[in-house]
Image (tube, rainbow, N blue to C red; front, side, top):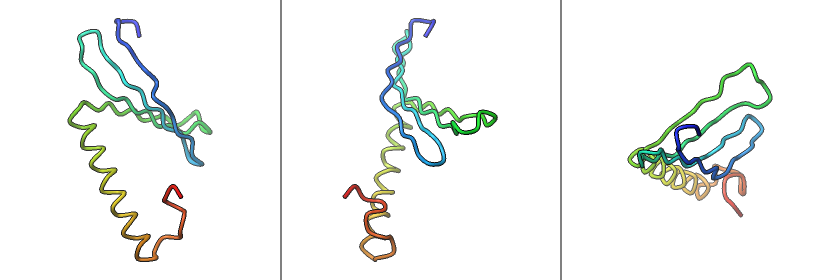
Length: 89
């Protein structure tokens, strides 16, 4: 990055419908954030979506993922989700 910022590529996910790339960015001023870029690599005419999350919003995302885990477990326990489709078994 040209302003002296540091960007660390944390990882990415590829799915059937798109990709997601996660980076950690530290600006030269010391301000840091998580950057999440989602796109459809099969269609270059579609624009991607960029999220930049500060500490508060990153925590909210983690809380949301925790609630999603709870919902998945509940539906799996009730037999409403086919086994193995959402868990890492």
